[in-house]
Length: 47
Image (cartoon, rainbow, N blue to C red; front, side, top):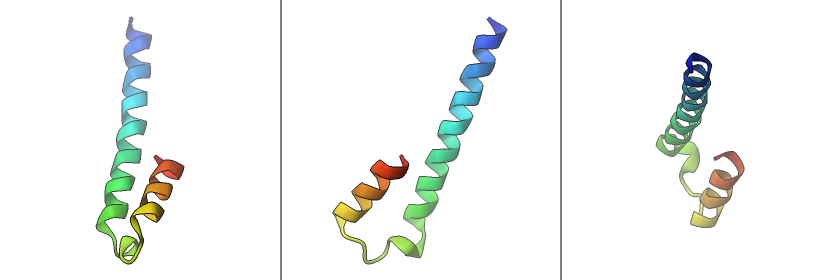
């Protein structure tokens, strides 16, 4: 069971890192001026 727990922890840490990158992107100036469709495309590409 220990191996499974370790793999789950690694999965969640990778997912959390991606989530934090997306939040950071939303919080940056680079999103200003983009249309909703451009934001959605970027999320689909990276998320």
